[in-house]
Image (cartoon, rainbow, N blue to C red; front, side):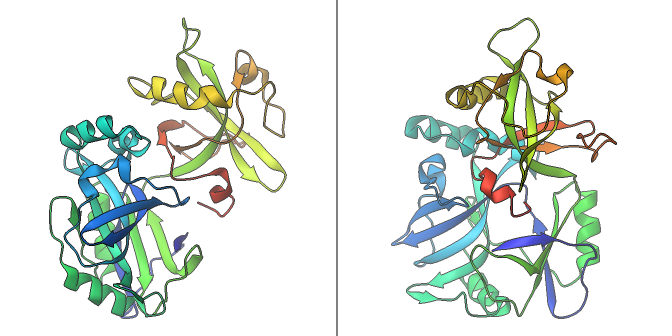
Length: 305
């Protein structure tokens, strides 16, 4: 179940409010103390997070967010390398040096009983009784004062707030008006259509060209170079190499200043970018690369992620 971007924070006893975490959404299926983790696009990502494989909770299906901490705050950048790691040995090493935490905010199945038809208020009460409270799995608090939480998350430089109607049932895959998100940071997800080498290099990624998924096809939204440094560049290069294409995947003409020297790719890789909105040319203003979203596909973005 997905949240809709809200215009005004709801108030009243029929709503609760949670911190919007800067991480990767997963479902955790627990059987006899062992968990299998599934990403939003239904990939098994258990191997990426070995420290979450053993959860001391009863059998069931949990909905939550995997987060990595950087200076005490969840950071998608800190999580990026963990998300796409499929080598078990490397994942185990990263679990020691850069551990993650599963923050659980919903209980969808308890034993063999499907709870999705129950209102959130009842699902939440059952979830809180599980009380995992370990370094690798926690149930964050929910609050009745949304304005207080919005201001507190702003001051603490957290991602934002998600407001949920307590009477809402869980509808898998639905982008529901009963869940509303209020992010502080102007971050959005885009599809990569090409990349340009770093100055003085022939194979190191210096910038990516990104686009928006529309009914007409992929529309060019700009070139993103800021934030691609250090370990990010070789990771991007490895992910983009098998997607090489002979021509631009964008349905509109790419300006010559961006197209010259660009290596085109099939539009399959999703990345997160922070920006100051759009310029009058409908390009991202001052965009900064934040990470690869291996948990999203271009089809997901058509739903308004």
